[in-house]
Image (cartoon, rainbow, N blue to C red; front, side, top):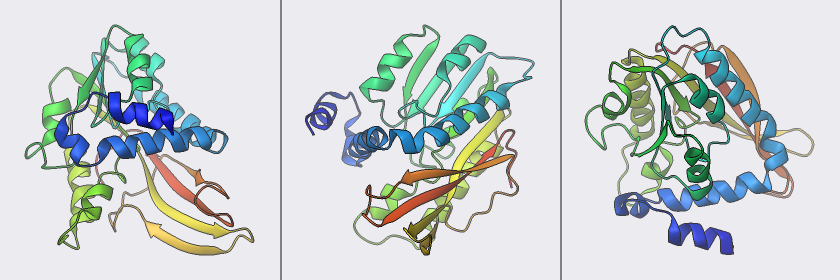
Length: 245
């Protein structure tokens, strides 16, 4: 609890991002990642391996951009920093563990930005990674996260808001000239201890992605994390050269 409070008090973040709840969500994610270290290990390893495979064979390796860099646990930062002239890590919040990792590489920079489509302009991805020197872009397990806080805000929420946010991010990625690696969880399955499915949630709000290059299961909340006799698993897909559905 004390560590969480320290992050909340000391993490540099724009006031608008703090007000929208991004810092709190990032701190909660950090705490869960520590509690579920063993359960998450396979998912994080699969994610890093997919990024490494996706950037293999690129003729030019000038700038790599990671969207939703977060805690950097699913990002092979050392691999990217060694192979690209520059690496930009983009997220709404950069907690201190990620900041310390980034400081180890002189060609890595942190970019603070809200990735929700339309919030920072008509096409925020074009501004962040649409320049001609960007050769590789990773959307790092952020797609399903983008609608969460907007859908939880008080007041009227359009019924199609989640789908519009997901589609907006995908459209932005499809317009980029760089090679795009898309990693995303697409479905949450809740099971009891007898293996019975008690709930399913479409994390992309009805937006289909097509056939992935790789897929795996993320044991997001093992038994005892969210509930004593229930676990939540996410189905994750990786597209090594995303060009749109």
